[in-house]
Image 1 (cartoon, rainbow, N blue to C red):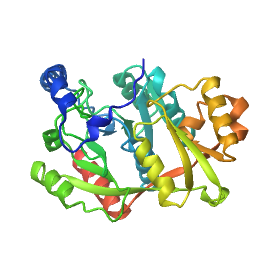
Image 2: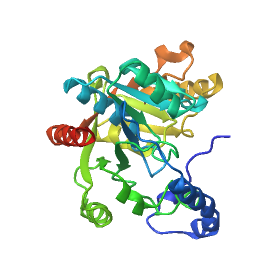
Image 3: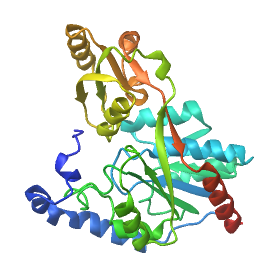
Length: 318
């Protein structure tokens, strides 16, 4: 059963539930310790990049993966995007397949083997920082500036897959900026205290098809993503009039009855319906002409800085 992310995970201070579940974090701690002792393989035939997260879900790693793919194309490098196959993540796999040269297998080692056979120069893995068997050449961690590390605890007491101190093991960090007026000094100070050498790249989400929408119209919005707050804030930032928001668990598989309820609700309020592109792909074809979705693009604030960073790291690997 897929559950929604608990709201107390993102409280800035720990509450009773966080403390109650804290002893159970031992399983994640032990798993991470064991993983740190497992010998990892570095591949000489191909370069590997991993775009993942410490905070579970909603950090923008899939759009960032695609952005890196497009940048590497500009650098005349033959790259592929890749994702370990999961039945409940078909949406993200489909998105990458439609927009890049994409590989998916049940094991990441199989992905590497296939990419080498394809004579690719670089693999960009979407997710996999906690992979036990591969020593990636370049490791990026993604965060949302509004959520940052939530209450700072490991799963299930909080939203972290591993301790924030593990940023010392990463080369770069993508920080998705939702509120451009936010004071990010605290986040930057915490990052640089842990790893002074890590490069931080700010990114933002832009709507590519905003001209297709009537901003004066009222909308019911729904989503089944890791960070629905970010989706809502993006709409509000672009002056959409949201009269109701419906959220489902991340990677939710929609049933016809779910969409029918949303259609009835919107009709009763004379409102349009908006969802994410990821969610739209999982809706039955029978309903798609009645629902609109946002086409988004992740923009890196200083693209030239990122290109130079990639060139330097790739040359170091050589």
